[in-house]
Length: 324
Image 1 (tube, rainbow, N blue to C red):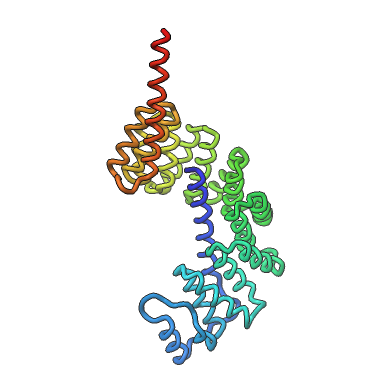
Image 2 (cartoon, rainbow, N blue to C red):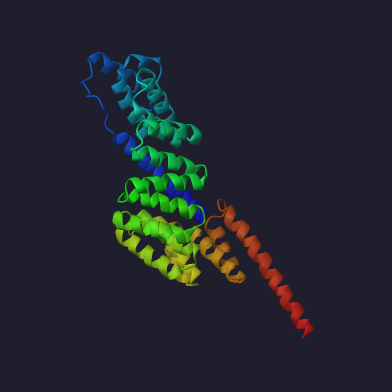
């Protein structure tokens, strides 16, 4: 569950990078489209699903190709945006803002090594471009190269100590490397720099959960929920912390807010199981299966394990009774 949450956090950071890329302004002024260009755009990107750019794009101005690339990136047509940005770079290889966007598109399509190459080329020309270093760090993070990611994010913090996103990413990478105690100061700093962003609060809560400090985890969850009462990740973390304190009924309510009833029963059952309460765990897993009989393989596996433990426990108790 922890790794799933942290992976989602990294994905959210990549999505934020995408939005930053699309919002970056071109260096040259944009002129109005000619009627012939408008007609060409309508032929290529008419009503319905957009197709990948074809040879028809060759006649468009680089600035218009850039605009198309941004639109495709926002619409998550990543492969098409890649083609469009490459066409711009073929004509204007010095456009480092376009190379940065190309890196973002590569990052979002899972081509992490290629993304790193593009971000590195941007940084070689513009070492002060924080977004490119952020992209480089995120590519390392997605590749699970945590030491390299931490190095990039530390450089970000050194370049701009007041940038909350940099502190958050440094803390997240440190947390992913299994060092929650070191991650907490960076994540707490991020929460102070971006007090209205619930993500740092959730990450701090996860760090305290890793340290089994459930009361502190709940404190940070509460702060995050004050910002966003419907934040499902925060409710899930709240359920984990409450279950860690063996407050199972309250944990169930929190898990219910984070997902559905079947998931809530399964999650509480996992904690009953970890605490050696196999009968209660089996009941929870059985309830999860009743609620979602054909789509919950995880609960079925958990139920089998709980029943095995329960049977073993009963057999062990029977042997002790005979010995007495």
